[in-house]
Amino acid sequence: MMKEYLKERRSWILLIVSLELLIVLVSYLDATIPFMPILYIVFLSAIIFVLFFIVRYQKETKFYRSLKDWEKDLDITNLVHGELPFEKIAENTLTRQTEFFKQEANHQFTSLEQEKDEILSWIHEVKTPLTAMSLIIDRLEDQQIKSELRYEWLRIHLLLDQQLHQKRLPFMENDLYIEKTSLQPLIFQELKTLQSWCMQKRIGFDVDLGVPEVLTDAKWLGFILRQLITNAVKYSKDTDIVIKSYQKDGHTCLDVTDCGRGIDPKDLPRIFEKGFTSTAKHQDRAATGMGLYLAKKAAKPLLLKFNVSSQLGKGTTFTLTFPKRNEFVHITGV
Image 1: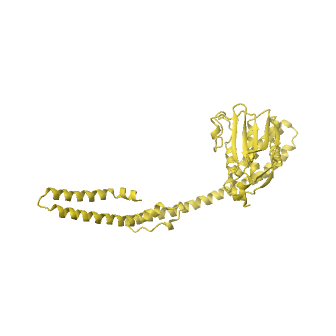
Image 2 (image 1 turned 45 degrees about the vertical axis):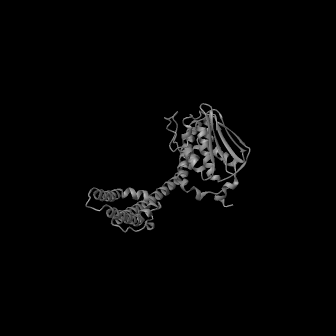
Image 3 (image 1 turned 90 degrees about the vertical axis):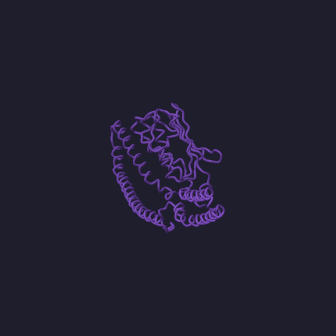
């Protein structure tokens, strides 16, 4: 703070020093003015100025020191009350602006909460007619129409599921339940949901679970796997997708490998960014750029690590690395 204060008072300091030097210069040039007494007076005045400067520094920077240490929580009670006129102006302005921002923040928070509740309610309401549509589609006899409708139904279902989990993500840590989770029923449930789409694209699955159980939250792991498997199916055709779990360096790993078109090397650093689709198939309107972004965000509270390897034209492997049990202590408390 001393450096800033010196800069602030630089012009005053220069003025005082210039006046002192001017007095010394005049007494030196004018023989009628005794030089030594003037020099003594200048010396004493310099000492007085330094003491005055130190006292004023403590007094004038007290308010600004508290302002510099002010936490970003809009709590103005921690600020030191201004004593000088300009400090009071600054304090009054800060108080008014802070109160305004508090009211605005509360209003925006209330609006966002209301909007979130309305969207979640809408999603749950839409699920009812979607379930009815699924039952109606199952009763159709024309297999071509049935297949096409099932595919469109699945697209709507997956988009609604993404939207639902996107709204829940900010509060995900309140919803976590870490337990031993069997991978087989979790994976098979996701494959069953995508069955009609996979049959349409003639895609099979090779599931090899060397490690049958992991310590995680089953619901959110299911959501992450849904994004990875959906992504693999979307960019594959007439091939098998390999899902396997294994141990590596004391960690459980889960691979989802496809033999699809692969990812361009220049796109790899960006695939988890919100809204990013692809530079190779940029005109693909079906892609939303949200699946991998949401999967990566959901993986963070679960302490899951993502690794991606891909060769253009040969396929992609997404690897989920699960944490060790002791890494979950801060979540489970055991």
